[in-house]
Image (tube, rainbow, N blue to C red):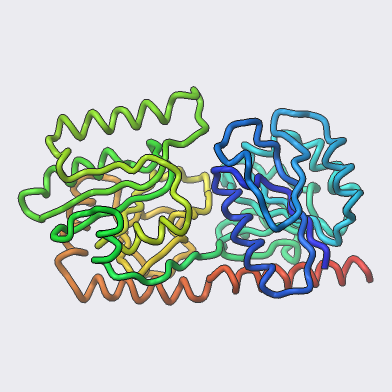
Amino acid sequence: MRIGLISTYGVKCGVSTYTEHLIESLMKFGGNEIFVFAEDNNKRSSRNEFSSTIEFVRCFHRYDESEERIIEAIEKRAPEIIHIQHEYSIFRNTKMLEKVHEICEDRTIMTLHTINLENKFDLGGLADYYIVHNDISRDYLIENGIPEERVKVIHHGTLIAPQMSKKDARKKLNLPLNRKILLSHAFFEKKKNIDLILQAVAELRDEIPLYYLHAGGVHPYGYPPERHQLYYEKCLKLVEELGISDIVRFDAEFIPDEELFVYLNSADVIMVVEENKYPLLSASGTMHTVARRPVIGSDLPTFSEFPEGCFYKVDLSLESIKEAVRKVLGDEKLSESLVRRMMEYAEKTSWDKIAEEHLKLYREVIKKAEE
């Protein structure tokens, strides 16, 4: 099967990482040729020298209104399936998507990484099939006129970290062996509520021997451009004001998966206290990168795909976060239950199983197009 994906690729962004994981798992099944029609880096990433065993061509840019380059690239490689990894900030040029759908009619699939449930769906007619990550998104598309048989729920793939002893992981990262480590990871930006975690750590430090570690660089995109850098600097200042510089560490750089696995294994608790942006639903790669550690996470519609009991839910308040840290660290049975349920879900949504669901859909689409 000749599969063409339109996406960011080889850069520091969630859609690019998603695409890389999907391709890696698709290739395990064999018998497939995969091409990536990728966005230009435009020198906005340190991974400009990115190399891949998968053929890719940089043939569009979010600020370029011309669709000639991508159409020429698609026609040259003639994929049987075109799969668009859609995010509004990337695909500003709907004329390009219209042209792609025109030349690949009946064989175009679009994964929706972000949906605004408050707005009328505006991507109808730009693909033949739509992939969403949860039932809320599926119902929204159907209510907005997309035929039910054209909407497929395929969960976000889950990346499972190889097991490593906590002691070995901490030694490798030069972390304290005798403290309870709270870990957050992903881009450093305000919606991660790192300032709230810092306040909780400060107020709990005399009660619990805590250590807080954040792994992940400052988000490279923002409006204004310096927005995320300013938040990072605010958090640095807050650490000093709260007097917790001895028990807080920011590893503010891009962390590749192999290193991230070490960070995850070093922790006692993973913190994912993202801001509630409902009705905007965006799949979270952070929640879908797991180790055998309990997770404290925001009670968001975005995380509705996770079965009950997979993570400890909190409101975005200081008291709620403090209470969660106390309970998860203080109740061994609760912690074990959270880990067990999350790992059960992770196995069901492993990238290999998610890739298999994609291949099944690709075959169905090709078969229907040939009828």
